[in-house]
Image (cartoon, rainbow, N blue to C red; front, side, top):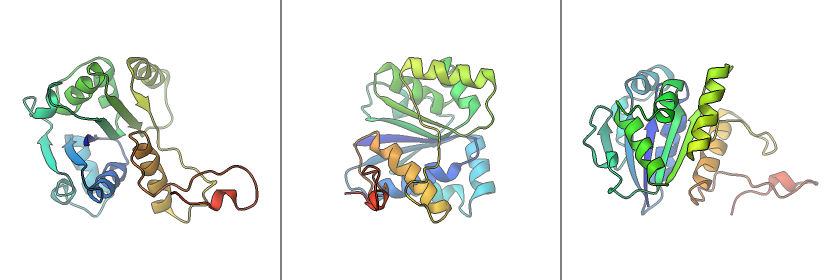
Length: 196
């Protein structure tokens, strides 16, 4: 399996980082990472990691300015792309096919090839323009997966909230990360049943 991971300039770079950490533990999954300028700034602002440490988690790293990269072509086979977090600027670029960066070009390729594109918007509150962009992205075929915390799984801290979201994102690609405490229906102890 080959997945593209994009980290754009919205708050929440930890989602993209955690995706890379989890995918690194799965043999047979090749990750292609592209980080925008804003994404690099947020990695420095929000985490204790350097950009180089984040890049070391990926199989292949591409410059966001390299429009000649492998992932810029539909002939380069991938199973899809996750942009986590997805800034409103990146969302707008995807919706309007304004591929002036590799991240947006790769997302555009994924859409045109009818592969799976998952966008993780991290912005609140949303104005009408944001809502229109999210609607248009969904109409183009993207899956909109904002990082909404679940509480039926009784999270004990921020790491649990992040892991649940990351696990659910990977579910969309048929990857069982073991991070999701599966809902087993209402009833005593139902929410306590963990993954596989």
